[in-house]
Length: 171
Image (cartoon, rainbow, N blue to C red):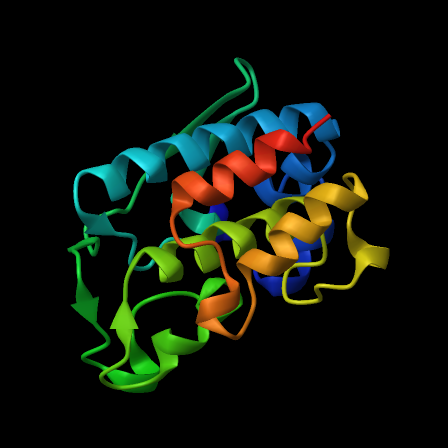
């Protein structure tokens, strides 16, 4: 279970789900990300924004190579706003800048940031967005980096736009 591992063992203990996931091939991790992205594309198409989505919301079945998503009870109808300030729901490592600012919009561009942050968590150095920590190709890195731009206007407008850019360079 995700909750059995503190910060350090999460990254290094052989029984940690996160550690085990990071040992999977890049191809399997990309397939997992595809599932996450397609789910959130659907969420966005239904008029919702992801709130409090982070790596602990991802369940991976190692015996079947299947990705499942849990803990979506804080997702909100869009558009939404940050009504809690710095304490807005979510793990710091996957929160966009607006998720720390009271009154800031929480919308599709926020979703895009979260998807980019998840990519850095599963393929890179989590909050360290340097290319040296990235394990996939440079083009995917550039897509993920744009997604986590601190400037909202520089991010992809929607998850669909993000997925299209991601898929166009995935080989």
